Image 1 (cartoon, rainbow, N blue to C red):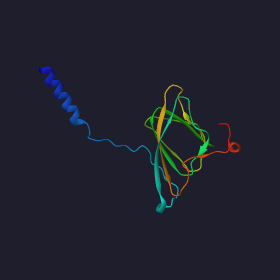
Image 2: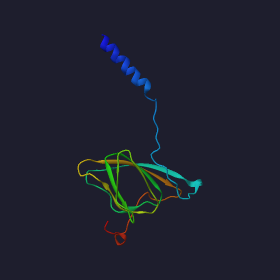
Image 3: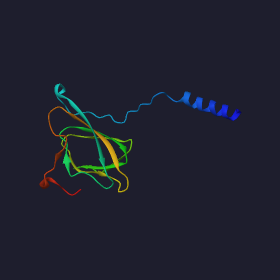
Image 4: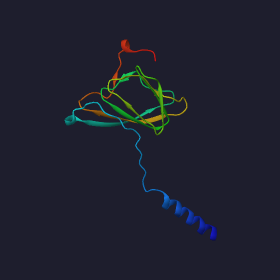
Length: 136
């Protein structure tokens, strides 16, 4: 009985010492000039199966991404290849050509959210014409 009482006191103390909520800034990014009268924000959940990805594309609007699980491999034309893991965030400037947007694993899926911030009507993603594609 005494050990159960002590355990209850330890659990209670741990609960008391934990903050009721935790918040952390995961990304701060300056945005391009946007028409504030026409802003629209769209949040999209994206999933790639192991080894899968999307065809080369661009986004006409700025995108903020956050990886929920797995690892995402990206490369925007002219930039280095990068891997973002669960809990990491990234920014994509408008109209950058995404040579690579793929699951970095051939065993585990990746899931991330992409927040599109647009000030005009436009598709979220635009395919890159074959003549504009390069080998990453």
